[in-house]
Length: 92
Figure 1 (cartoon, rainbow, N blue to C red):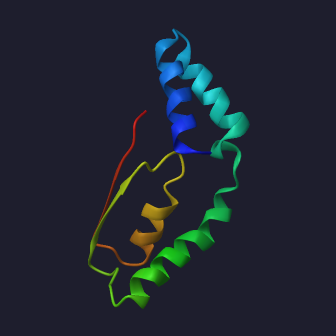
Figure 2: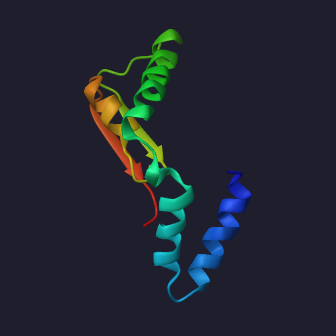
């Protein structure tokens, strides 16, 4: 989904009294909450390859992810690859 549409939907939900529940319903119906968690593993492997192919390292490094969402696959993946620390921030 285009980020601007998502921002408008989120803004509308914030203004409604039951907005939090509505947003969760929208995410479960149309968003990634219905997605298979295991389908994200190949994306994590690809990100790790990008870092390694560019001469970077994962082991012993610190990683920070913005917008983790409901599935912290990236954080878990980097941790399993030997990252020293993984940090995340997202709104609730």
